[in-house]
Length: 145
Length: 145
Length: 145
Image (cartoon, rainbow over all chains, first blue to last red; front, side):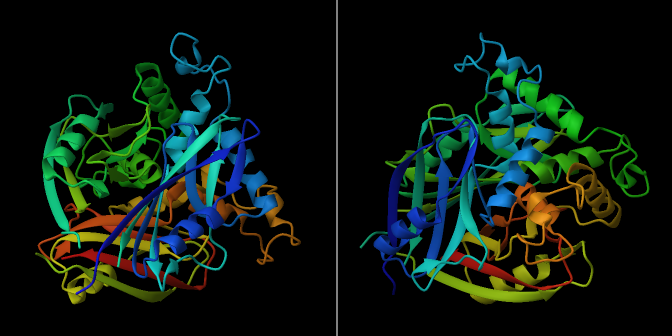
Protein backbone atom coordinates (compact mmCIF):
# COMPACT_ATOMS: atom_id res chain seq x y z
CA UNK A 1 0.00 0.00 0.00
CA UNK A 2 1.18 3.44 -0.91
CA UNK A 3 1.72 6.33 1.46
CA UNK A 4 -0.32 9.38 0.57
CA UNK A 5 1.41 12.72 0.64
CA UNK A 6 -0.40 16.03 0.73
CA UNK A 7 1.94 18.97 0.26
CA UNK A 8 0.99 22.61 0.12
CA UNK A 9 3.26 25.51 -0.62
CA UNK A 10 2.70 29.13 -1.54
CA UNK A 11 5.09 31.46 -3.28
CA UNK A 12 4.91 35.10 -4.26
CA UNK A 13 5.62 36.94 -7.47
CA UNK A 14 6.12 40.66 -7.88
CA UNK A 15 4.67 41.98 -11.13
CA UNK A 16 6.14 45.13 -12.65
CA UNK A 17 3.63 46.30 -15.24
CA UNK A 18 -0.10 46.82 -15.46
CA UNK A 19 -0.52 43.80 -17.73
CA UNK A 20 2.14 41.14 -18.16
CA UNK A 21 2.51 37.39 -18.52
CA UNK A 22 4.93 35.25 -16.54
CA UNK A 23 6.06 31.71 -17.20
CA UNK A 24 5.90 30.14 -13.72
CA UNK A 25 6.58 26.55 -14.79
CA UNK A 26 10.01 26.46 -13.16
CA UNK A 27 8.75 27.66 -9.76
CA UNK A 28 5.93 25.08 -9.89
CA UNK A 29 8.26 22.30 -11.00
CA UNK A 30 10.60 23.09 -8.09
CA UNK A 31 7.70 22.63 -5.66
CA UNK A 32 6.82 19.28 -7.24
CA UNK A 33 10.41 18.04 -7.19
CA UNK A 34 10.89 19.00 -3.53
CA UNK A 35 7.55 17.37 -2.58
CA UNK A 36 8.95 14.03 -3.76
CA UNK A 37 5.56 12.87 -5.05
CA UNK A 38 5.92 10.41 -7.93
CA UNK A 39 2.33 9.98 -9.11
CA UNK A 40 -0.54 12.30 -8.36
CA UNK A 41 -2.21 15.61 -9.02
CA UNK A 42 -0.92 19.17 -8.90
CA UNK A 43 -3.31 22.06 -8.35
CA UNK A 44 -2.13 25.64 -8.79
CA UNK A 45 -4.41 28.51 -7.83
CA UNK A 46 -4.15 32.25 -7.88
CA UNK A 47 -5.46 33.80 -4.67
CA UNK A 48 -6.45 36.96 -6.55
CA UNK A 49 -9.38 38.15 -8.65
CA UNK A 50 -7.43 40.10 -11.27
CA UNK A 51 -4.88 37.41 -12.13
CA UNK A 52 -5.35 34.41 -14.42
CA UNK A 53 -3.52 31.11 -14.60
CA UNK A 54 -3.58 28.92 -17.67
CA UNK A 55 -1.41 26.59 -19.74
CA UNK A 56 -0.16 27.36 -23.24
CA UNK A 57 3.01 28.08 -25.15
CA UNK A 58 5.04 30.90 -23.61
CA UNK A 59 6.44 32.61 -26.67
CA UNK A 60 6.94 36.36 -26.98
CA UNK A 61 4.88 36.89 -30.15
CA UNK A 62 2.02 34.76 -28.84
CA UNK A 63 2.05 36.65 -25.53
CA UNK A 64 1.54 39.88 -27.47
CA UNK A 65 -1.28 38.27 -29.47
CA UNK A 66 -3.03 37.21 -26.27
CA UNK A 67 -2.74 40.69 -24.77
CA UNK A 68 -4.15 42.16 -27.99
CA UNK A 69 -7.04 39.68 -27.95
CA UNK A 70 -7.91 40.57 -24.36
CA UNK A 71 -7.72 44.28 -25.23
CA UNK A 72 -10.20 43.64 -28.02
CA UNK A 73 -12.64 41.31 -26.24
CA UNK A 74 -12.61 43.03 -22.86
CA UNK A 75 -11.55 46.65 -23.30
CA UNK A 76 -10.12 48.60 -20.40
CA UNK A 77 -12.35 51.35 -18.92
CA UNK A 78 -15.31 50.47 -21.11
CA UNK A 79 -17.98 52.08 -18.94
CA UNK A 80 -17.94 49.25 -16.40
CA UNK A 81 -19.98 49.79 -13.24
CA UNK A 82 -17.20 48.28 -11.14
CA UNK A 83 -14.87 51.07 -12.33
CA UNK A 84 -17.01 53.56 -10.42
CA UNK A 85 -14.74 54.55 -7.50
CA UNK A 86 -17.55 53.69 -5.07
CA UNK A 87 -17.33 50.00 -6.00
CA UNK A 88 -13.65 49.39 -6.57
CA UNK A 89 -10.62 49.54 -4.32
CA UNK A 90 -8.65 50.45 -7.41
CA UNK A 91 -8.91 54.13 -8.33
CA UNK A 92 -7.73 53.64 -11.91
CA UNK A 93 -10.48 51.04 -12.55
CA UNK A 94 -9.82 47.33 -12.78
CA UNK A 95 -13.14 45.80 -13.89
CA UNK A 96 -11.54 44.66 -17.16
CA UNK A 97 -8.97 42.70 -15.13
CA UNK A 98 -11.68 40.89 -13.16
CA UNK A 99 -13.58 40.05 -16.35
CA UNK A 100 -10.47 38.82 -18.16
CA UNK A 101 -9.59 36.64 -15.18
CA UNK A 102 -13.09 35.15 -15.20
CA UNK A 103 -12.69 34.26 -18.89
CA UNK A 104 -9.18 32.80 -18.65
CA UNK A 105 -9.56 31.03 -15.32
CA UNK A 106 -7.56 31.14 -12.10
CA UNK A 107 -6.64 27.52 -11.68
CA UNK A 108 -4.37 24.97 -13.34
CA UNK A 109 -4.49 21.23 -12.65
CA UNK A 110 -1.74 18.99 -14.01
CA UNK A 111 -0.97 15.31 -13.55
CA UNK A 112 2.25 14.31 -11.80
CA UNK A 113 3.98 11.31 -13.34
CA UNK A 114 7.47 9.95 -12.74
CA UNK A 115 7.99 12.68 -10.16
CA UNK A 116 7.55 15.50 -12.66
CA UNK A 117 4.77 17.58 -14.19
CA UNK A 118 2.92 15.83 -17.01
CA UNK A 119 3.08 18.70 -19.48
CA UNK A 120 3.43 18.59 -23.25
CA UNK A 121 6.58 19.77 -25.00
CA UNK A 122 5.29 23.28 -25.70
CA UNK A 123 3.18 23.71 -22.56
CA UNK A 124 4.04 26.24 -19.87
CA UNK A 125 2.08 27.28 -16.81
CA UNK A 126 1.42 30.98 -17.34
CA UNK A 127 0.37 33.66 -14.89
CA UNK A 128 -1.38 36.66 -16.43
CA UNK A 129 -1.12 39.77 -14.29
CA UNK A 130 -3.90 42.11 -15.36
CA UNK A 131 -3.90 44.76 -12.65
CA UNK A 132 -0.25 45.16 -11.68
CA UNK A 133 2.16 46.03 -10.44
CA UNK A 134 1.30 44.03 -7.33
CA UNK A 135 2.66 41.24 -5.17
CA UNK A 136 0.78 38.04 -6.01
CA UNK A 137 0.49 34.80 -4.07
CA UNK A 138 0.32 31.45 -5.83
CA UNK A 139 -1.11 28.50 -3.93
CA UNK A 140 0.26 25.07 -4.87
CA UNK A 141 -1.38 21.89 -3.64
CA UNK A 142 0.04 18.45 -4.40
CA UNK A 143 -1.56 15.09 -3.61
CA UNK A 144 -0.12 11.75 -4.52
CA UNK A 145 2.21 8.92 -3.65
CA UNK B 1 0.74 7.60 7.93
CA UNK B 2 -2.30 9.66 7.22
CA UNK B 3 -5.81 8.40 6.64
CA UNK B 4 -7.25 9.40 3.30
CA UNK B 5 -10.80 10.70 3.23
CA UNK B 6 -12.89 10.90 0.11
CA UNK B 7 -16.14 12.77 0.68
CA UNK B 8 -18.78 13.53 -1.90
CA UNK B 9 -21.86 15.64 -1.42
CA UNK B 10 -24.36 17.21 -3.76
CA UNK B 11 -26.67 20.11 -3.08
CA UNK B 12 -29.30 21.88 -5.10
CA UNK B 13 -29.99 25.50 -5.85
CA UNK B 14 -33.16 26.97 -7.25
CA UNK B 15 -32.53 29.85 -9.63
CA UNK B 16 -35.22 32.47 -10.09
CA UNK B 17 -34.30 34.41 -13.21
CA UNK B 18 -33.15 33.63 -16.73
CA UNK B 19 -29.62 34.84 -15.99
CA UNK B 20 -28.31 35.35 -12.48
CA UNK B 21 -25.17 34.87 -10.43
CA UNK B 22 -25.02 33.24 -7.01
CA UNK B 23 -22.26 33.28 -4.44
CA UNK B 24 -22.13 29.63 -3.31
CA UNK B 25 -18.97 29.93 -1.18
CA UNK B 26 -20.87 29.41 2.08
CA UNK B 27 -22.59 26.20 0.92
CA UNK B 28 -19.25 24.84 -0.31
CA UNK B 29 -17.43 25.87 2.88
CA UNK B 30 -20.09 24.08 4.96
CA UNK B 31 -19.40 20.86 3.04
CA UNK B 32 -15.66 21.22 3.62
CA UNK B 33 -16.08 21.92 7.34
CA UNK B 34 -18.39 18.93 7.83
CA UNK B 35 -16.02 16.66 5.87
CA UNK B 36 -13.35 17.32 8.49
CA UNK B 37 -10.54 17.21 5.92
CA UNK B 38 -7.57 19.35 6.96
CA UNK B 39 -5.36 19.28 3.88
CA UNK B 40 -6.43 18.30 0.40
CA UNK B 41 -8.30 19.25 -2.71
CA UNK B 42 -11.87 20.41 -3.29
CA UNK B 43 -13.55 19.92 -6.65
CA UNK B 44 -16.89 21.58 -7.39
CA UNK B 45 -18.74 20.74 -10.59
CA UNK B 46 -21.97 21.79 -12.15
CA UNK B 47 -23.91 18.83 -13.56
CA UNK B 48 -25.50 21.07 -16.18
CA UNK B 49 -24.57 22.42 -19.60
CA UNK B 50 -26.05 25.91 -19.24
CA UNK B 51 -24.51 26.79 -15.88
CA UNK B 52 -20.97 28.00 -15.20
CA UNK B 53 -18.85 27.89 -12.07
CA UNK B 54 -15.88 30.15 -11.55
CA UNK B 55 -14.04 32.12 -8.88
CA UNK B 56 -13.93 35.90 -8.69
CA UNK B 57 -15.14 38.78 -6.56
CA UNK B 58 -18.87 38.68 -5.92
CA UNK B 59 -19.76 42.33 -5.98
CA UNK B 60 -23.02 43.72 -7.38
CA UNK B 61 -21.51 46.15 -9.90
CA UNK B 62 -19.05 43.56 -11.16
CA UNK B 63 -21.83 41.00 -11.53
CA UNK B 64 -23.65 43.45 -13.80
CA UNK B 65 -20.45 44.04 -15.78
CA UNK B 66 -20.00 40.32 -16.31
CA UNK B 67 -23.59 39.89 -17.48
CA UNK B 68 -23.10 42.80 -19.90
CA UNK B 69 -19.86 41.29 -21.20
CA UNK B 70 -21.56 37.94 -21.84
CA UNK B 71 -24.45 39.73 -23.59
CA UNK B 72 -21.91 41.40 -25.85
CA UNK B 73 -19.60 38.45 -26.59
CA UNK B 74 -22.30 35.78 -26.87
CA UNK B 75 -25.60 37.41 -27.73
CA UNK B 76 -28.87 35.66 -26.98
CA UNK B 77 -30.82 34.31 -30.00
CA UNK B 78 -28.10 35.24 -32.48
CA UNK B 79 -29.18 32.85 -35.24
CA UNK B 80 -27.72 29.82 -33.47
CA UNK B 81 -28.51 26.42 -35.02
CA UNK B 82 -29.10 24.94 -31.57
CA UNK B 83 -31.95 27.43 -31.08
CA UNK B 84 -33.87 25.65 -33.81
CA UNK B 85 -36.66 23.87 -31.85
CA UNK B 86 -35.68 20.58 -33.52
CA UNK B 87 -32.32 20.59 -31.71
CA UNK B 88 -33.07 22.03 -28.30
CA UNK B 89 -35.22 20.91 -25.42
CA UNK B 90 -35.67 24.58 -24.62
CA UNK B 91 -38.33 26.26 -26.73
CA UNK B 92 -37.11 29.78 -26.03
CA UNK B 93 -33.58 28.92 -27.29
CA UNK B 94 -30.64 28.39 -24.99
CA UNK B 95 -27.63 28.06 -27.30
CA UNK B 96 -26.13 31.25 -25.86
CA UNK B 97 -26.25 29.66 -22.40
CA UNK B 98 -24.33 26.57 -23.58
CA UNK B 99 -21.73 28.75 -25.31
CA UNK B 100 -21.28 31.04 -22.31
CA UNK B 101 -20.87 28.01 -20.06
CA UNK B 102 -18.20 26.61 -22.39
CA UNK B 103 -16.28 29.90 -22.17
CA UNK B 104 -16.55 30.35 -18.40
CA UNK B 105 -16.11 26.72 -17.38
CA UNK B 106 -18.16 24.38 -15.20
CA UNK B 107 -15.62 23.37 -12.62
CA UNK B 108 -13.79 24.94 -9.70
CA UNK B 109 -10.83 23.32 -7.92
CA UNK B 110 -9.56 24.82 -4.68
CA UNK B 111 -6.94 23.71 -2.20
CA UNK B 112 -8.01 22.82 1.34
CA UNK B 113 -5.62 23.99 4.02
CA UNK B 114 -6.08 24.12 7.77
CA UNK B 115 -9.52 22.58 7.32
CA UNK B 116 -10.82 25.47 5.23
CA UNK B 117 -10.91 26.58 1.59
CA UNK B 118 -7.70 28.18 0.43
CA UNK B 119 -9.29 31.24 -1.18
CA UNK B 120 -7.98 34.78 -1.40
CA UNK B 121 -9.60 37.62 0.50
CA UNK B 122 -11.81 38.76 -2.40
CA UNK B 123 -12.44 35.35 -3.95
CA UNK B 124 -15.88 33.77 -4.00
CA UNK B 125 -17.08 30.62 -5.72
CA UNK B 126 -19.74 31.85 -8.14
CA UNK B 127 -22.46 29.95 -9.95
CA UNK B 128 -23.73 31.59 -13.13
CA UNK B 129 -27.23 30.49 -14.07
CA UNK B 130 -27.71 31.24 -17.76
CA UNK B 131 -30.92 29.40 -18.60
CA UNK B 132 -33.07 29.70 -15.51
CA UNK B 133 -35.22 29.49 -13.64
CA UNK B 134 -34.29 25.86 -12.94
CA UNK B 135 -33.25 23.58 -10.12
CA UNK B 136 -29.50 23.00 -10.34
CA UNK B 137 -27.36 20.31 -8.76
CA UNK B 138 -23.83 21.03 -7.59
CA UNK B 139 -21.44 18.12 -7.14
CA UNK B 140 -18.77 18.53 -4.46
CA UNK B 141 -15.87 16.11 -4.18
CA UNK B 142 -13.26 16.37 -1.44
CA UNK B 143 -10.07 14.33 -1.10
CA UNK B 144 -7.50 14.74 1.60
CA UNK B 145 -6.35 13.94 5.10
CA UNK C 1 -8.83 2.41 6.12
CA UNK C 2 -9.12 2.73 2.41
CA UNK C 3 -6.42 1.90 -0.11
CA UNK C 4 -5.49 4.81 -2.31
CA UNK C 5 -5.13 4.17 -6.00
CA UNK C 6 -3.33 6.49 -8.38
CA UNK C 7 -3.82 5.47 -11.99
CA UNK C 8 -2.47 7.26 -15.03
CA UNK C 9 -3.17 6.42 -18.62
CA UNK C 10 -2.67 8.23 -21.90
CA UNK C 11 -4.43 7.64 -25.16
CA UNK C 12 -4.12 9.16 -28.60
CA UNK C 13 -6.64 10.56 -31.03
CA UNK C 14 -6.10 11.26 -34.71
CA UNK C 15 -7.94 14.36 -35.88
CA UNK C 16 -8.91 14.64 -39.53
CA UNK C 17 -9.80 18.29 -40.11
CA UNK C 18 -8.33 21.65 -39.27
CA UNK C 19 -11.05 22.34 -36.70
CA UNK C 20 -13.27 19.63 -35.27
CA UNK C 21 -14.86 18.56 -31.99
CA UNK C 22 -14.74 15.03 -30.59
CA UNK C 23 -16.82 13.49 -27.83
CA UNK C 24 -14.19 11.60 -25.80
CA UNK C 25 -16.46 10.63 -22.91
CA UNK C 26 -16.44 6.94 -23.80
CA UNK C 27 -12.64 6.67 -23.94
CA UNK C 28 -12.40 8.46 -20.58
CA UNK C 29 -15.12 6.33 -19.01
CA UNK C 30 -13.31 3.16 -20.14
CA UNK C 31 -10.17 4.35 -18.32
CA UNK C 32 -12.20 5.01 -15.16
CA UNK C 33 -13.95 1.63 -15.29
CA UNK C 34 -10.68 -0.26 -15.80
CA UNK C 35 -9.00 1.67 -12.97
CA UNK C 36 -11.58 0.23 -10.57
CA UNK C 37 -11.69 3.41 -8.48
CA UNK C 38 -15.06 3.87 -6.77
CA UNK C 39 -14.78 7.35 -5.25
CA UNK C 40 -12.27 9.98 -6.26
CA UNK C 41 -11.21 12.53 -8.81
CA UNK C 42 -10.55 12.30 -12.53
CA UNK C 43 -8.26 14.77 -14.25
CA UNK C 44 -8.05 14.88 -18.04
CA UNK C 45 -5.45 17.06 -19.72
CA UNK C 46 -4.48 17.81 -23.28
CA UNK C 47 -0.70 17.79 -23.74
CA UNK C 48 -1.00 20.30 -26.58
CA UNK C 49 -1.28 24.06 -26.94
CA UNK C 50 -3.76 24.16 -29.83
CA UNK C 51 -6.34 21.75 -28.40
CA UNK C 52 -9.02 22.48 -25.81
CA UNK C 53 -10.89 20.20 -23.45
CA UNK C 54 -14.17 21.16 -21.88
CA UNK C 55 -17.54 19.74 -20.81
CA UNK C 56 -20.83 20.55 -22.49
CA UNK C 57 -23.55 18.94 -24.58
CA UNK C 58 -22.18 17.22 -27.66
CA UNK C 59 -24.89 17.92 -30.20
CA UNK C 60 -24.25 18.60 -33.90
CA UNK C 61 -26.01 21.98 -34.12
CA UNK C 62 -24.36 23.22 -30.94
CA UNK C 63 -20.95 22.09 -32.19
CA UNK C 64 -21.47 24.26 -35.27
CA UNK C 65 -22.55 27.18 -33.08
CA UNK C 66 -19.39 26.86 -31.00
CA UNK C 67 -17.17 26.78 -34.08
CA UNK C 68 -18.96 29.88 -35.42
CA UNK C 69 -18.50 31.66 -32.07
CA UNK C 70 -14.77 30.90 -32.05
CA UNK C 71 -14.50 32.10 -35.67
CA UNK C 72 -16.12 35.35 -34.61
CA UNK C 73 -14.29 35.98 -31.32
CA UNK C 74 -10.85 34.77 -32.42
CA UNK C 75 -10.58 35.00 -36.19
CA UNK C 76 -8.06 32.89 -38.08
CA UNK C 77 -5.07 34.76 -39.58
CA UNK C 78 -6.04 38.09 -38.03
CA UNK C 79 -2.61 39.70 -38.26
CA UNK C 80 -1.28 37.75 -35.26
CA UNK C 81 2.45 38.10 -34.55
CA UNK C 82 2.70 34.38 -33.84
CA UNK C 83 1.57 33.69 -37.42
CA UNK C 84 4.83 35.19 -38.66
CA UNK C 85 6.74 32.12 -39.94
CA UNK C 86 9.70 33.10 -37.76
CA UNK C 87 7.70 32.44 -34.60
CA UNK C 88 5.55 29.46 -35.42
CA UNK C 89 6.33 25.88 -36.33
CA UNK C 90 3.13 25.92 -38.36
CA UNK C 91 3.55 27.52 -41.78
CA UNK C 92 -0.17 28.11 -42.28
CA UNK C 93 -0.41 30.08 -39.00
CA UNK C 94 -1.97 28.70 -35.85
CA UNK C 95 -2.05 31.64 -33.43
CA UNK C 96 -5.86 31.56 -33.44
CA UNK C 97 -5.72 27.95 -32.25
CA UNK C 98 -3.46 28.83 -29.31
CA UNK C 99 -5.72 31.74 -28.35
CA UNK C 100 -8.90 29.68 -28.60
CA UNK C 101 -7.32 26.97 -26.46
CA UNK C 102 -6.38 29.57 -23.84
CA UNK C 103 -10.01 30.76 -23.71
CA UNK C 104 -11.64 27.31 -23.58
CA UNK C 105 -9.12 25.60 -21.31
CA UNK C 106 -7.09 22.41 -21.66
CA UNK C 107 -8.19 20.53 -18.58
CA UNK C 108 -11.30 18.77 -17.30
CA UNK C 109 -11.76 17.61 -13.71
CA UNK C 110 -14.71 15.37 -12.83
CA UNK C 111 -15.71 13.59 -9.65
CA UNK C 112 -15.79 9.78 -9.61
CA UNK C 113 -18.71 8.31 -7.72
CA UNK C 114 -19.98 4.75 -7.61
CA UNK C 115 -17.14 3.76 -9.93
CA UNK C 116 -18.29 6.04 -12.74
CA UNK C 117 -17.89 9.64 -13.89
CA UNK C 118 -20.11 12.07 -12.05
CA UNK C 119 -21.47 13.84 -15.12
CA UNK C 120 -24.90 15.32 -15.70
CA UNK C 121 -27.33 13.79 -18.17
CA UNK C 122 -26.37 16.08 -21.06
CA UNK C 123 -22.68 16.48 -20.23
CA UNK C 124 -19.94 15.11 -22.47
CA UNK C 125 -16.19 15.57 -22.27
CA UNK C 126 -15.29 17.31 -25.51
CA UNK C 127 -11.94 17.69 -27.24
CA UNK C 128 -11.69 20.65 -29.61
CA UNK C 129 -9.01 20.20 -32.25
CA UNK C 130 -8.13 23.64 -33.57
CA UNK C 131 -4.99 23.01 -35.61
CA UNK C 132 -5.48 19.56 -37.14
CA UNK C 133 -5.12 17.16 -38.62
CA UNK C 134 -2.68 15.89 -36.00
CA UNK C 135 -2.20 13.04 -33.58
CA UNK C 136 -3.12 14.22 -30.09
CA UNK C 137 -2.28 12.73 -26.73
CA UNK C 138 -4.72 12.86 -23.83
CA UNK C 139 -3.39 12.43 -20.31
CA UNK C 140 -5.78 10.87 -17.79
CA UNK C 141 -4.99 10.86 -14.08
CA UNK C 142 -7.25 9.16 -11.53
CA UNK C 143 -6.94 9.29 -7.75
CA UNK C 144 -9.28 7.68 -5.32
CA UNK C 145 -10.31 4.58 -3.44
